Length: 284
Image (cartoon, rainbow, N blue to C red; front, side):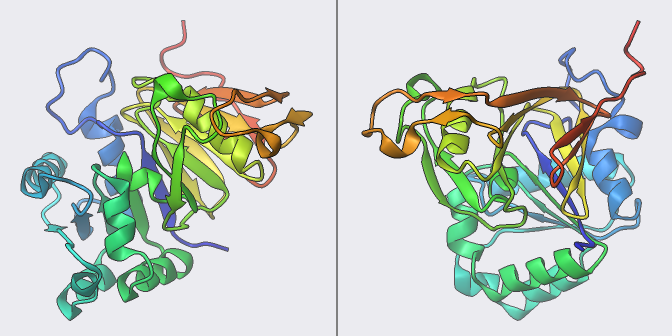
């Protein structure tokens, strides 16, 4: 059984200074980063923010330090890894070994895999996640890299056709899932549909912005945040023509199970079952 907690986030999570109405949760007591801190052991936990995916790592790192400071966290360190060799520097491995929470920032998920995958850093991360009570969180690119079959690109306008979506091998923290982010805001339904047509033994999770999952035991998912999670479960497809199609032609799938879930709802990966929160605070 996996002892660690996985928290993929759909991107653009509230960092305590958003003004938009859709960030309707109280940041200090209900926000996603509050939950990350809570799962990590509280405000005295040691949080390592890895900004490798970002093109502006200094800015991103400062934003997270400021965000966690609002939650009274004082042990927050940022780390930018530029190469596989740099990933395995002793001082970087020590940071990883001593962290209660490792959070991967957004940006380009391919940067994470090209610089960290199959390094000693990656090995230690996987071992700690499987065997220790730590948190591995990631937002946007940092969430998408958690899959084994990692989406790397694909235009939303050109999706629903074979080979419109690009894939690479991800970090394999949760191989049963294919994770896409900014899902509602960027209309990524088509590319996740293609993903589960191609990899029909996986389950597709589309995370809206400021929305995430808390995954315990590598199986039990709880939705958190202010938006929705869309689940595409291909487990009972009665027709899927992906394997016989030519590239660039439209897909056909029938009986693709779809769920739309929000904060407090739960999903069991092994059983593929839903438990819906029946009395959320915002109900009439």
